[in-house]
Amino acid sequence: MTSVAAPTVVHTRAPGKINVFLAVGDLQDDGYHELATAYQAVSLYEDVRARASDTFSVRFSGGIDVSGVPVDGSNLAIRAARLLASTTGYRGGVALSIEKNVPVAGGMGGGSADAAATLLACDALWGTGLSRDDLLHLSAELGADVPFAFAGGTAIGTGRGDELSPALAKGSFQWVLALADFGLSTPTVYHELDEHRRRHSGDISPVRQPVVDAGVLQALRAGDPGMLADSMHNDLQAPALHLEPGLSDVLELGERNGALAGVVSGSGPTVAFLAPDLDGALELQIALSAARLSVVRATGPVHGARIVGD
Ligand code: C5P
Image 1 (tube, helix red, strand yellow):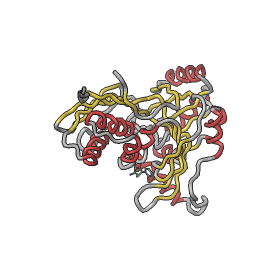
Image 2 (cartoon, protein in one colour; image 1 turned 120 degrees about the vertical axis):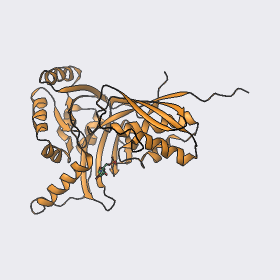
Image 3 (cartoon, protein in one colour; image 1 turned 60 degrees about the vertical axis):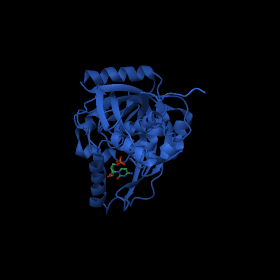
């Protein structure tokens, strides 16, 4: 009988996301808002390498500024590894190296991708043998966006955003992402939305059960960027623009330079522009770079967390 040696290093990858539609309902007793969102995973990845260790540690590399990211026990990847260890009774630790490509505090779920890729990496490294469904279930304990980083593709999120149902999607969409040189705190953006609703409670209709617009589902099903551009929406965009008024100029610049539409991704500040096709995306990338914005191109949808064979 041959025995399979435990791997010394496991390499996994999970994607960042864009919320092509995000409707926010009321604040619930648990401090979260009820959401209805359409997620698309895009080709900006977090690469996690996990090595056996007696302790838990994380270090970062890549082109993204990680100065604001903690590397102690509050780091989401370390919390993911510890959660898997405590759930399975595993007694060792892990040394994590994360190559970051998704902006920090950018509204694209970079920390969530770290957590999703870490769960998968540690499960393989430690031989704890959980199923993909078990890991998906566990991921919801780490944050509202973590299950989607694990699942990838295109999906509708309800509840906190963590109750996923797959959405039919055809073809590939071309995105140009304008990255900010600052971050926005997700709780602050939600709080700003609540405050705005409170201030204007007399003149805006009360929030009802949030739902994803039928036009979004139709556009994703048809793989039609023009149709998707017409129905993209994010309730967190107004509070993000209120906190960072300069983002309005970024949105305007993209739309003047060939974007079908732009939307603040998640709680921002990344602005995601939908281009009509690859040529349009390249032209837009050049125009925004010429205006000294930091820009990357991405396509979506892409797969969720997976093991990479080196
Ligand atoms: O789950 P996650 O850690 O990503 O959420 C960060 C914060 O964003 C929450 O503590 C909450 O303030 C806010 N949030 C929310 N409603 C959601 C998701 C996030 O209010 N559905």
